[in-house]
Image (cartoon, rainbow, N blue to C red; front, top):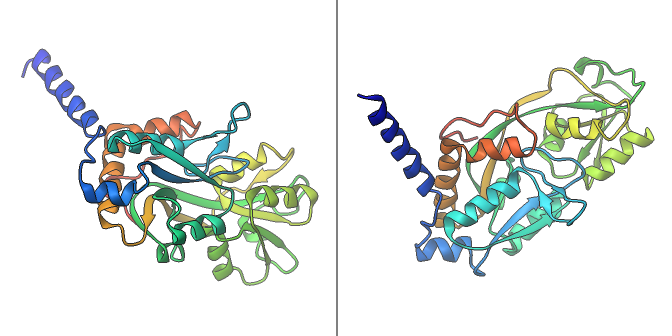
Length: 273
């Protein structure tokens, strides 16, 4: 095959893939389940530091920005519907809103408790979890954490909270409603460590002079995925196809890069929990 012909074939494939992210949401069932109000209401987790699903607020506009926001906008483009971003600074309120039907799609780590109120599609990222300690801490390694008297802060309703509740034998687990509260507890020295995903803790460390993120991890393999409220099969099929296409043609990669996560690895095709 000539170089010109090869180039044309690749161009055609790229155009076909890009077209797949344009409007193909003509199904009445899809629109009823994914945009029942005429808009796609996307639940966005927001906090003081970003990760592959949590957004931060632009200080100039107070609007969220991050991976989930970029994916939400691409999803709206594919469906051909406007996007309404519904912001939540804690998981408890976000899940309660799912029960009320207050949003239509979200991007969150998989968790068994969350799966009781939402259905997950394919993963777009696999997570690694570790600890953050403040300046001067005597904790230097993973093995130093689970000891009597050690206080560990987690966000209530997070994957990390359930994981640590099941795994810790000696340390004390303290739950806080928001990530901002966890940050303040670390800064004030009221806890000895904070547990969360590595990207989240790296962001917090940048806000806490002298804080350190521990090497290694206590859990690897959690997945971040697209999800919809329970009993919306047409919506789930649509968003699942969207994520698979977005991974294949670089939309997820660009969202990671735009948010500064250039080392984050996109989950492989058809990657589920």
